[in-house]
Image 1 (cartoon, helix red, strand yellow):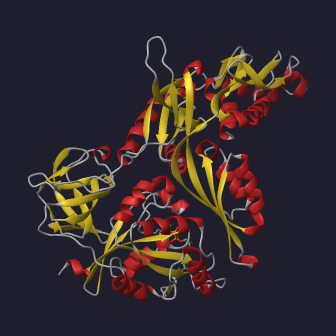
Image 2 (cartoon, helix red, strand yellow):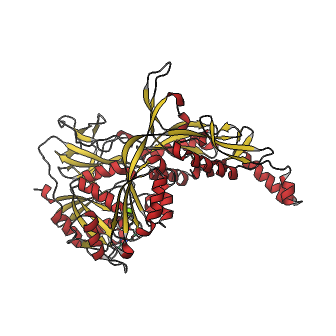
Image 3 (cartoon, rainbow, N blue to C red):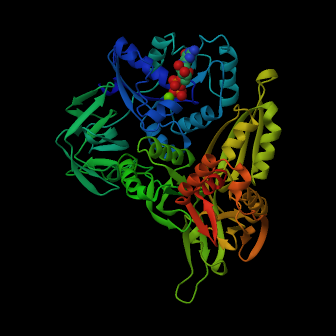
Length: 603
Ligand code: GDP
Ligand code: MG
């Protein structure tokens, strides 16, 4: 009876197409927030500053709406591919989705990637064409695009403006009419999916759940099947979006629990929560342990900040169990941490939060993917396979039988005119073209490209290059498709004949020379002249593949530059002295920290 009046749905959209605005509007229309609470430009569902600024949702938030006797659970999903597994669990907790497409922009890469995932989860999809208030809106064209590109019937798509409020009632009605209610057995043993969790300073770890069967009650002793732990449920509730405590969650319902859990790391997205006394026979399908795929070193610019950095990393990890860190020391950069992330955006978010919220000045080494190395046996060890997270730990090349690198399937969606440049970029990055389709015509002509690419070639500056080639118009999305063998080698950078560990990287043999040359040229510009000549080399094993030389400087540069101006001279000397603390010595060569930063920034 009650379950018939539940609808669980998510909103899928390309970034900026109006997902958050629509969510807020639905909350407002159903009385979750007063008009006064709605004003102010802060969106209710996006919590953290960075999310708001970038318009992405990092942690899923879910809201329960009450409308005409129905309980509508709106599941907000993380807005980026790095969090693909979290997205998949959120989608698995719903029976349907609102597909929001901007009436002026039309279908984009993220729309496609998300909608296909939603279809995979057997969702009933309700198309919504948003922003029809815009002068440039072309709802008819977009309706056709949805049908043509995605293959969905869009004849009943709701025309809406989340900004002005047009179409909101129709959307609510479509949710009730088109999205099926959940199914579940109230009499069966408890089975609930752990959809998400986060740390709340007042509540401790909050767990978002979707009950499949049975009832999740306050005071119950529950078992997390994958983690193998038991906990006492001390709160049950939902968000409207304000917290509302309940006594229980029944089958089909989405809500939260707390269970005196101290760390988010104790909870695993996708885990099955069951009754400790009357457990379910089998866990829910689809549980997966997420693993970091991109690694980089994070070093404090000021060595005295090391402890502060460690502390900050611990604090961040309280709320994000998906990134990892361990101490690392580098001759060039001192003490820091090797950190693992779910993807590049994830890396950027953590880096930015450290800088902004924790006020740390950081050096980030070039991101590296996880390589799988098959080693032959050595004197003391058997043949084995290792995972390499740091080029500095590269084993003896003689022992390497083969190396595998992770690949992705990229979906790129671009206005036709930039296609040539993008094809070249993908080609240069060892891409394998899988699909090229044209959609639309005239000024709206676009190409949909699918490329298999080594992740290694994407982590450097692929996204930036794509954006610059397409003047920001191309959109990009990707999924991981596993490891493949590659002709990969470690390239070292030597300054005055000495290898600089922070600059070594693993590259494909075919692109090594170009990469090496680029790095040598950059370093030549970045390292100040010394009293002697400094060779800068890129080498594979013992073989030099690129070389630049910094010529020697004549003595007394201050006298030459500034003639007799004493104050300017003093200032320059002071500046040099200050800079000295940040210099590292390499075979008698002082490399300013800034040179490392700049060299690493450019990959
Ligand atoms: P999200 O990235 O999908 O969550 O998109 P947002 O909800 O953050 O919206 C992106 C931008 O589009 C914001 O500046 C919104 O104010 C604006 N926006 C959202 N919906 C509408 C709409 O219906 N009409 C207009 N004109 N702007 C909208
Ligand atoms: Mg948003």
